[in-house]
Image (cartoon, rainbow, N blue to C red; front, side, top):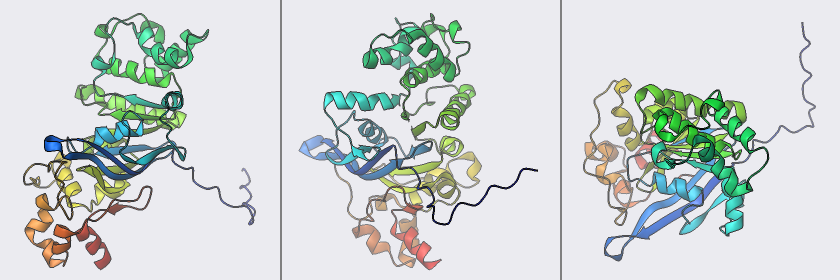
Amino acid sequence: MTAPAAPAAPDQPAPEPAGPVLSASGLHVTFAGRGGRAARAVDGVDLEIRPGEIVALVGESGCGKSTLARALLGLVRPTSGQVAYHGRPLDYRSRELKRFRERAQLVLQDPSGSLNPRHTVYDAVAEGRRIHNGATPDEQERVAEALSRAGLRPPERFLLRYPHELSGGQRQRVVIAGALILDPEVIVADEPVASLDASVRGEILRLLMRLRDDFGLAALVVTHDLGLAWNIADRIAVMYLGRVVETGTVEEVLSAPRHPYTRALLSVLPEAGQEPQVLAGEPPDPTRIPGGCRFHARCPVLASGRAEAAGVAERCRTEDPGPLPAGGAADAACHWARAQAAGG
């Protein structure tokens, strides 16, 4: 029998958890809206993506998820606040930004739109490396390695094929291989399986999890599908009208949701075992974000009188719960949820 390991010396401090690979702090992104009013697409977001974890960013269409994702990659410049890479604020000068984009890669929803139909798989995968490093003697070896890591084996079968000769799942793997050839630390995948058949979605999700487990790759997965988030994510951030309104581990958020918005999103899943909650109206115009809690006009808890019973209805209508801090304990930007937690 192997002897047990000796305990650590009492004066030896425990290792500190690694800091985030990519983070946002007080991030705002506004665009010119109708009538000259500013559209607040991202309206005060704190978010962290740590080494070797998958964070799911979920919410309805138009809530600001994709704008936030692009801001994290330096593709959209914030109006205020900052994006940081390993704790250092992102430098938007072209040379520094180019270096950053080697380490942080975007994977888009539609692989057909991401691939040039006139380029072979070899050229599609090699393109990013050529842009950043030029042609190198080991290019073919690196392309083959990236294809293999993306699950296209043996890679020699795919090198000279064109996108139209591949299935949708294979095309998405080629897009992922094009990101992997640069050895990124983090990828941002914007609805990575939305355009794929159900039969291949699981394969792509398992690939992302294997990349996390085998290579320590961190990922932000943007999705409207809470079922997908449950199957792939370590942590989850729920976004509504430009702001993260609930965050925590995937088990905390999806097993015991606190925010009424998260509860409504979960209620439509078949496995929820409850009547779907139909939210009143459409999400408000981002040029006219309501005062108070930005969700209050659609909130079933406020409409049902439960917020009144908890003594927070007036606060819901007039007091902004504020943005959630990054990397903290499970929390929801909701007066009623906080009153319930305090009472419990």
